[in-house]
Image 1: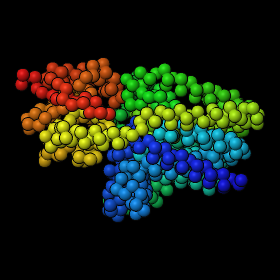
Image 2: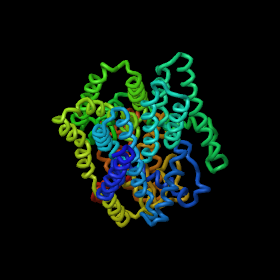
Image 3: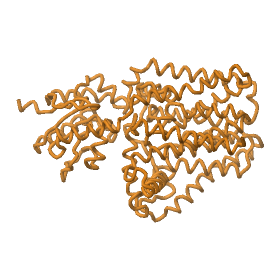
Amino acid sequence: MRLSGQVLLAFVASLLVLGGLIAWLQNVHIVTANGMYKSIQAEPWIADFAHARLDPSNYLFFPLYGASSRLFDALGLLRGMAWMQFAYFNAFWASVGVVVVYAFVHRVTGSAWTAALASLFHLGSGFVLLLSVINEDIMPGYVLVLAAMALAGIWFQRPTYRQVVLVAALFTLGWLVEWRLIFPTLPALGLALLLSQGTLKEKLLRAVVLVVSIVAVAGIVQQIWEGHTGAVGLHDLLWTGKGVATGWAGIGWDKAWMMLSGVGNYLLLVGGFVDPVAARRAAGPLALSVAFQAAIFVAAAVVLWPRRHEPRVRAIALVFIGTLGAGQVMNFYSQPQDPQMQVNVMGWLTVAWATVVAACVARPRLRIVLALLSFVPLAWNVAALAHHRGGDRDALEALATLERALPPEQTVFVYWGFEDIAMWQYAMWGRTWDLDEGNWEPPPRFKWIALDAAAIRHPGWTAEQHAQSIRRGLDLAFDRGWRVVIGAPWTWSEAELAGQLGGLSAANRAPAIHRMLHDTYVATPVLDVKSVGTYYELRRKSAH
């Protein structure tokens, strides 16, 4: 079969597997609910494409997925359910990513068997598979950047200027879908060009062409959208500052646990996804997953060491290992546990596995073993995802229960801030964010307070300022005569609250917040909701 037929088969097979998995799981919010918010943000692009507002940090994402949703609606496919449509769009782009991996490995090794096993390994890897079947927003940008990295690995041993421009164009389109993708890979591409073959002048010119091409492509995109609602200038497109100067930024020991979670779960989904507390509880399985990855790295290094002076080997290593190094430095500063922050950074693992397979595939007895090992991540991670099956249905049932027992018109909900049920209430009851130094005027239908809000939005606050901000919101609710209920955070100890805040570089705020809550208020269980947990009704202590 010709290569074109092979990649078409890889695409179709991947799309069928992923589409079937989405339909079977019936949960497009596994691990993260961010995709629901993105689908809501895309609704103006679906309703009125010409007048919807651009987002500088996702400049091409909302136009792309908005247009895709309009197509699905026109075809009668999940009409009006963008939050579910997005998962299928991700499955499409993930299948394109499988094609990229297959074509890249086939080009480098010349082996269809190696390309097939590397593609299987890639698709089955934990975060790749997860992001392929939920509605998070990273997949199209990730795939475009992956394609740019693959071409750079093949070409950047001694590239022509045309090849540099093409890589720059694909890379730029990728980070224009998700701005943060620019940081891990740009240094790696530049380093690969500076260490490519040729004179010093040629190397410097290639690096200059890369940077100029990136700016030029971004400038062309900026000009195309000039005059559109929310359009920004080129400077603001190159630097949006997303996530900077917020609670996500910062360095501390808690980030080490979250890094363990991000790297470990990238290959095998074992848990501990969200915060340092959860990561510590899952430390054993996470460390085992990291050990497997380290073994693959060492095996690939042993295989490639005799070829270390080959220009193509050096280019591939610089692009993929360079992205790993730069990316994990950035991740340690921000959100190392987040699947979308790890997925492009960890692309080296598939390349390393392909290297090991290529070295052993000529031995017939090892082929079956290699095939089984390549299948292990997919089998493991499908089983892990199966535990979340039916989550969207359960959430909608829980929402109906809450609406009956705790009518939102008379109730204020207090959450940690990352609960999935809060996302559903936001989406279905009213598009109002949690109270943050506001006054609920006019009163929205869904009224809620997030304990983590100040840690994210006001990183410069003291612990006491954070605690008093929460108290002002609670007192405002009581003064209005509303019922106030709180979920699981009421039962957390001070240490557990500190662990949760550690993911936002704000663990030192825990004592003040915990003391304020438990010294000022009392709570009694009021409602148990399946798949969500227990709600407690808060009252002022002075009222007793």
